[in-house]
Amino acid sequence: MVKGKLDGDGSLSDASEQGATAAAEPIDGAGDDRSAVAATVATVAVVGIGAAAFEAALLPGIVLGVAAIWLPQYFPKMGEAVNPLFRSTVRGAYKLGKKTKEMMAEAHEQVNDIVAEVHAEADQDRTSSKGAAAGASPT
Image 1: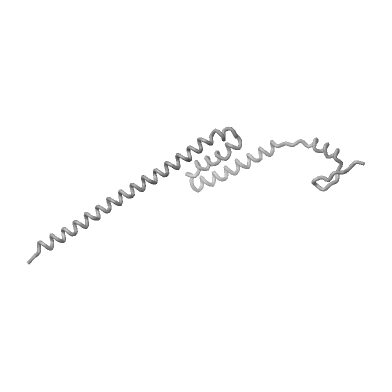
Image 2: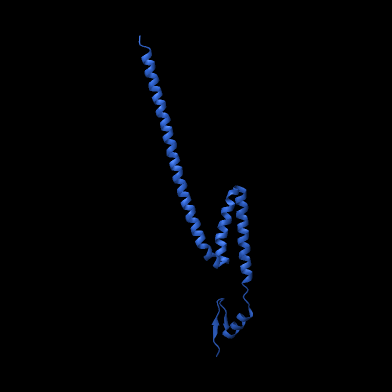
């Protein structure tokens, strides 16, 4: 007696028939890969056009983001090689930002000191001119 096998579609079929059907249906993954790439390209194009319409300065960041996502997926060895470069770039940008922030804080402090000196000189000039005016008019 031949036992039937329950397929995923709910039909009861013979195991030998199922094996023959599986061999007859070739799996073509190339079409799926092309459609995924086409969908990605279309999405990037729409985002790029939207960014260009609103703010053109966003385009380099979008390009870098797409490259950062795309390269490791399609070139795994390149992703491994670029990882240290990416890390050092991020570290350098962070240190540069921190130094810039420190320099701006120092410049802000120096400007505040100069403004305070100008105010002190103006107050000193007012008190000396009041003293001279008071001393010059005794009757």
